[in-house]
Image (tube, rainbow, N blue to C red; front, side):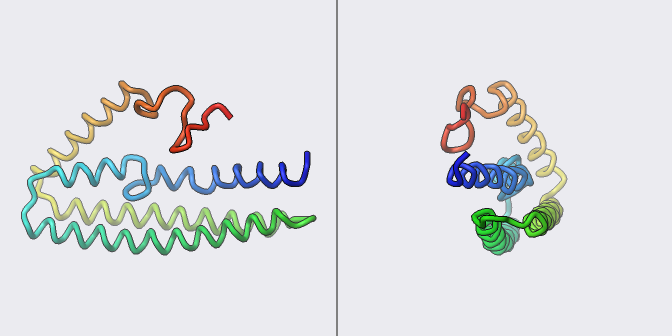
Length: 162
């Protein structure tokens, strides 16, 4: 295998490992989180609730911006290490550990935000939200795990067959 093919393979592998679990972590990161926030917006909220939720969303956006920059830095360091003639497994392991710690911290922040959103809603709104989320989950189940994209398609690029 040529050096450029090895680099490309490593880049794709790292990208899959690095960002696959972040996408499933919750609000703002894909997975059911986006459905959750859309479901919250579909509720009949008071102006005070809308203000509180907007502030929570902004705080989450700031957290994600910081995490994204850190993940980018780790990815660049990882790829730089792989580009070397003799990459250090210890360095790659350390970078992977840093990345895993960031993903865990990010998931915890999302859980904290979910609890904060929960506290803003009334019991009736929470029940309606959970009912709506369950209906959407069932609809997604009927269409298949990846919605209506079609067999084998993945993400935005539709490269499922590779």
